[in-house]
Length: 509
Image (cartoon, rainbow, N blue to C red; front, side):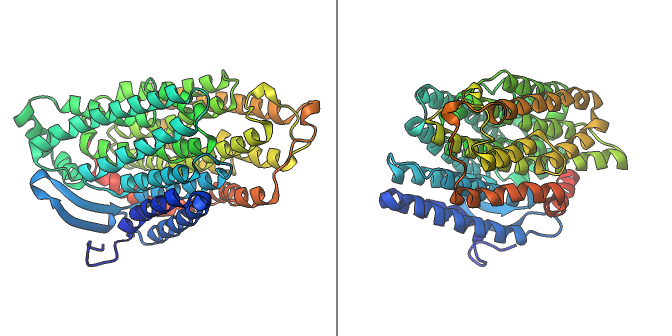
């Protein structure tokens, strides 16, 4: 632990650094991308340092606290455990990938890279804040740059897509805010740790009931709605396909690789610790929605002909596995076997968050490369046989798609396996039906590989440019990470398992 003002405030530095970079990039213009690359590289180094300084017992470490507005329950309170530190690492990696993929941005480059860095600051703040007011500021901060990045640099229908994205996420934010204002009115606290302790002892529900009546289940619904929109959980997903398709691919990398994890993180950090009893009471309909998200997300992806929409719905499907694991955790577990299943599911959820972020961002990176070479084309039927003129592109993108498919030996397999290993003993019906999502995912991803990279080469693609040297060097570490985490997942699981044990020990269902 390091107290704010006495120790080195590394979490504050990590959050402020992108904002400083954003201000410099805004005025740098022609050199804005260089500023953004240096800033994101520095953030990645700091995130790696944080990852190596986690408490061994899985508790919250690197704590920074300072009084802000005590009478309003507002405190500057930062800290991370294995879950938060892994999300910082993911955000830093995905933002660096996004900046690298955005080298063809010529329209207002200073503003573009400044907004990307502001979005990164919002991500870092959301994954380190432990007071609702402070956390909510960064939760909203990430929304504003994302809206303008879609609105100003998106595709032909960027206006409606950006507006829909803003309205949906703002509605979710309002639901969150109203629920926590009610909690503050009843308890006088906005600290996540204090509220979780109250919930574990049963004090929180009693205080809410004494001040507001039997509204605790409705407060839980409001919080769930706020996070469900962000992930998203079907049927709150309708903003996502348009936003992902119309946003520039480097921005889509941020939306799917990092921003979507804010919703899953919120469920684990806020919803389950504070509203665990209420979520457990709703676990059956929530599990049904999670299964629908898994299966229908894959089915919707299979029905698309636009490659960006294919990967957009695929993202819904893959995050559905996280939701499946989270809602299965709300089933009370008694006995060592059931507790081991919960631990496996939670380890799988956290690992899936990271692995999906890397893989999905990589797929949209490849989409940016293909669109740049094809003049903006992105239909499944617009290509064919690209493996012959561009074998390196076909091979590297194929690895990323097989990772998304869940092929053993690649990173996408391990998280999904752990989730199913944990969920099946807790809710075998949910796990069994969700296996359909794996089958459909395999079908549509193999279909994409077949139609885009195999078959005869159309004459106009006979000289389709392969990846050049700098692109190969940029993508190689990402592909290498997919193999590394697929073969040695203990690199992450070993670090997050103490956090998993600590979280499960303090949740009350």
